[in-house]
Length: 91
Image (cartoon, rainbow, N blue to C red; front, side, top):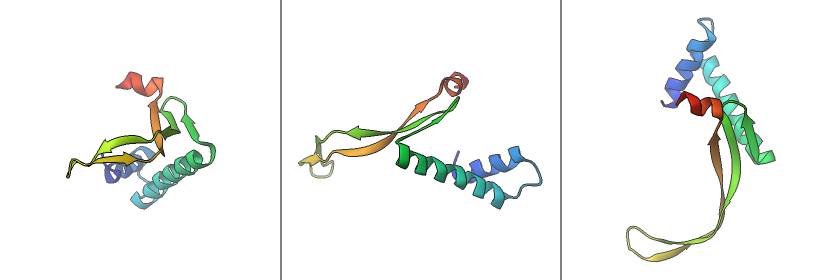
């Protein structure tokens, strides 16, 4: 499912009186709220769905796939998603 399909699903679940533009604004608002929540508090937990949290990645050695040359990859931060129990049970 891509974003367009997700907007259509949100529109369908909200009812006939909601336009596609309104459904897209609602979806964008949720996504932006998740992003800002992760940025501020480092964790966003949606009970029954899952948890978004910031994790640190250590510096490590890697290989450039084009040249085969060994390179050093800097330490960085990334976002990890852990599936909630209710969501996991659906799958």
